Image 1: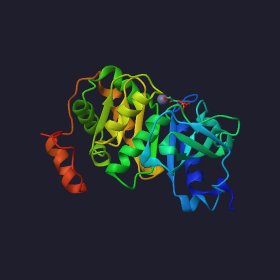
Image 2: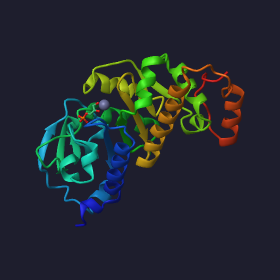
Image 3: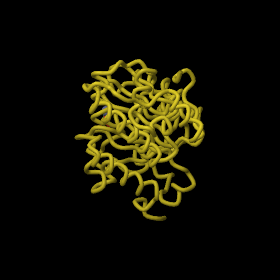
Image 4: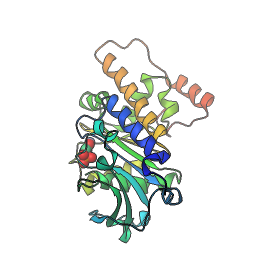
Length: 270
Ligand code: 13P
Ligand code: ZN
């Protein structure tokens, strides 16, 4: 059996979480990440017949039955993950239609997966229906996106168009735009269901006055998606109080679509 801490996705997750913390996106225990694992690869590193304990999930997700996830722990500080991965992370297998998680590794102080596990698992289900390659759901609290939800219209077309106008590359990186949920109580099945519904049409879902969710095929892609949206929001927060003299026009957006071979969300451009 190989050392689980050398499993490539484990190494990548720890690096990514450290980077998220260094970007200021994850104060205290803010943020959570889940990665769906390949069973065959995992078996090289872990005896998957050895269940440490079972944890009820509080929801059903039949589509994820038998699937394995590497997930951040609830209440755990991102800044500490690199120093104590086995305490701050866990590997679980969903059984009984996703109503129960079997802990196979981690949460070594008796902890459990993130309080946002419903939003993560329901979002995995939603994204896998759109993109069978999807593996990652990432949640964090980037300051500028959060700030923007206090001063910008939360209408999804308006919010998306503003971000697209803030940096040339935004429409190229997230042509599907950004969906937005109003403030809701976090850590509940309700916000999980609402997030998953929004994930059916976009890989980014903003939680007003809270943070953002991103989805992607790997950690780099998902990190980059949030990083690009956050850059757009940063520019917006720098200029929103100033007279706007120039912008990226819809005609220029169409040029970007053609040049980069992307298609903007239908109806979002003139
Ligand atoms: P957890 O510590 O349970 O992951 O919660 C952090 C968070 O960001 C809640 O939205
Ligand atoms: Zn949060």
